[in-house]
Length: 163
View (cartoon, rainbow, N blue to C red):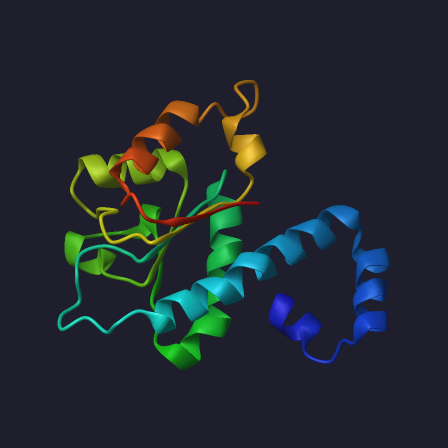
């Protein structure tokens, strides 16, 4: 979706995109781009590992699996050239498969993946909470305690973005 729509847009085209698709989609697209490119640059600037490692360098928490899959589809387009793996926590079938550069998860699915040993977040140095306001509101999702548990397992020095 994003890649095709943004290939030949100038500033006027971007404004027309905003008018055509609406303010909500515009905010979603711009927030995705705001952390997508820096995440790729962040991974590429890290020293290469001698072996696959155990866990992602970038963790993106999304409120729903549907949004997570949309994010994964867009990331896959941009990450293909740099050989960065983009994984979904609810599609991990073994611990070895969790050795990717980017892991996209909902707080609930990541909580279970961590408990079952399918991944860990010790190597995460770039954390994104997409839809943080939505996930933290008790009447909407109420993921506060799960997010707190996940963040407590991440390194002390980590770049965190709330979108």
